[in-house]
Image (cartoon, rainbow, N blue to C red):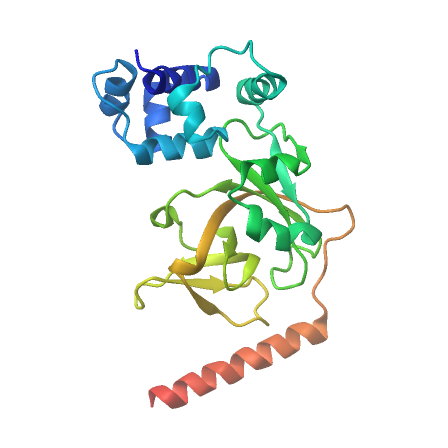
Length: 249
């Protein structure tokens, strides 16, 4: 069996996934995954790239190394421990590291330098945690940590769900996202705080997307709406509605 085919089967069994579960993550048919594992077909490059992203491996690891042989160096053993763990290590990106992350998000060595933690309710998958600042997503308070699962394709975006979006133009933002069906290649970013206006972003600017799975905030940090603040928001919304009505008429 070729190294790549053997590694695909090994990695699947390492995580305890069925062929159907692994195939779903790779966005291929189960029968095709079976053909790969039985060496009746060579894995496509895009499939191998997805595997590398899920397991934090390089293409050289997949194509040339027998990943089932853990008798190598310390890094190989450390990687094996990460892969076998039912609870994945979650790299944490604090606000102070946001600028560096934009340059190193695709560099495995940079990601390995980030602090990590685990959560008992998460198993398998590719997760990352980001610290957010500001009040645009109230009632989620500033300083919260958003743990997101990697979205491999923009087609997988679920309208009105919340995401951490890493883009060339906006950096790292936490927003509710809606596909813009009226404007091609655009995503609509919506804040939960109505005081902030909705805006669009080009899909070509998107570097990464992480669907929010868990929100972690400090005890006692939950913010409440101020009556005057709510009154101002209602007034602003009323003015916006009135402006829209005038334009329509």
